[in-house]
Amino acid sequence: MALQEYSIVRLELVRRERRLPLPGEVLVEKGEQVEPDIIVAQTEYIPGDPYVVDLRSDMGLKRFDLDQMRESIEVEPGQRVAKGQRLANLSTGLFSRSRTAESPVDGVVEYVSAVHARILIREEPQSAEPVVVVNVARHLDVWPAMVRMYLRYREGQKVEQGAILAASPGSGGMDYAYAPATGTIERVDVHNGLVYIVRPQQVTRVTAYISGEVVEIIPDEGVVVQGQGLVINGVFGLGRENYGELLILGEAGERVSADNLGDEVAGRIVAVPGPVDADVFLRAEELGARGLIVGGADEMDLVEYLGEEVVSGITGDEPIDMTVILTEGFGRVLMSPEVFEVLRNNEGSLVSVNGRTQVRAGAQRPEIVIPASAEDGRDVRAGVGAEEADPQPGQLVRIITTPHFGAFGEIVEVFPTGKRYETEAELPSVRVRLRDGKDTVIPIMNVEFFSGPVP
Image (tube, rainbow, N blue to C red):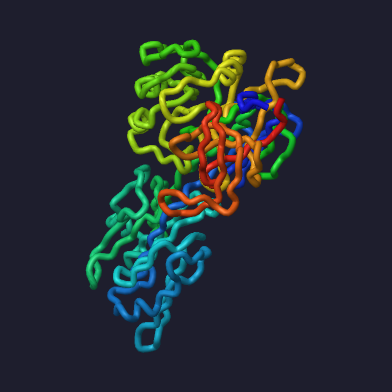
């Protein structure tokens, strides 16, 4: 069987889990038909702040002995603590009066300093309270009615976590009350000496990502969506999940420049079969394209687009608004005819793309998902998919390291006991016959195995 008969375009039942990072509300029902832009779950939460616990203030100490402070601290970095848990305990005075400091939140201790008498706790978002109450009168040791005199903020003003909320001169120097969280001053209670800070909430929404049916509900967390689709796995990608109407620019082999891009790319997934440069990436994102699918790109063009070096080990979290997928690999290469033909036949469809790429353990490839019906009669050959497998002669592989990054080939020989390389390393390897008929020997760790029905 000739190697060129293999196809990386697969017609399959696509199943994707859509889960919230924190417990929330599921907005759809089992059996419901959804499109990629439908919000299936959402959660409102308060970002966890780093809480600074001032031991000197909380324990009512005007001054302290460093050795005593070291002995009094009962937690260490990395330790998980609960709200109200004792952080430090110090006995002072003639009658050994016990002075303690407690954790104001559930979280993890990140920093402990006996010298500065402070503990930093990273709050857990799921347990964050929407309103924080600060007892300024107790922190400053003043009458509650006098609190306004020492406040540095007024109602309606925003205060940042860690800022000095109030300060007053004490017998041992200045006493401070710090804002334990970022928020807005809602109220100052002069009867009890309290300041109320309302914290901003954030909303996280999860969309269906693909067209299909909700086949499973994950209570308070999300859903599983399933639908028939054409799946194309690229070699390398950048950026998060996205979706939009598919638009083709140019013909196979035709060079597309930034000047060829207009307002029609806004909100769409744009596929360019010909070679492109950095200007095309920059212009597409500037015009509001949600995704750009190309055959290949020079690494320096991607660096110019990102404004930083490309980290090829794992991608998907880059600070960009557009998802980028290279279907063939690095270099200004053309998109393969089989991929271009499938994309051209589906122009105008609502497609989903994900640029996340991982070439280490748990390999993941960027993907293009085109909704398809099992009865629509599309002329798509059965494809092949990545799997974990032991190398066997005749097996299809894709190389995931230079100089053949992204190239497909067929194993013609296996060296299980290892092959010695110029670096003097001896590694289990395979001999791979590439599509152009040339052979190359490569370590097994640098190939990705594929399997599936082949015509």
